[in-house]
Image (cartoon, rainbow, N blue to C red; front, side, top):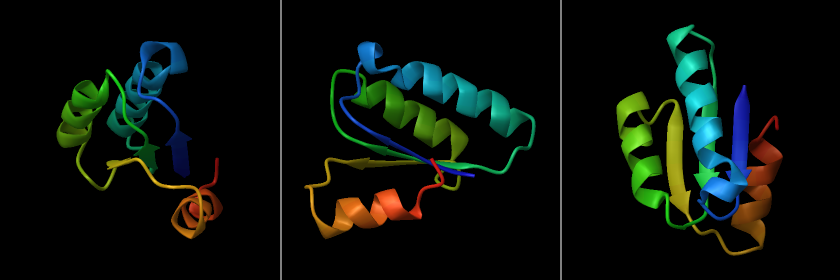
Length: 79
């Protein structure tokens, strides 16, 4: 399963809830890959989670300008 999060990395956007779900799914050996697009106050916490889970599970890509790279990321995601 390939998941894409595109938005501000803030508590209001639920990115920490997403990362907790990813931790649980990874612990249950559920195959998934999450890409995080964006920046914000939780960027450091997201980077730590990405480092803990590994690049095969979480990729932190920063900001992608709207255009071909962003649309390719959306097209490659299952959700």
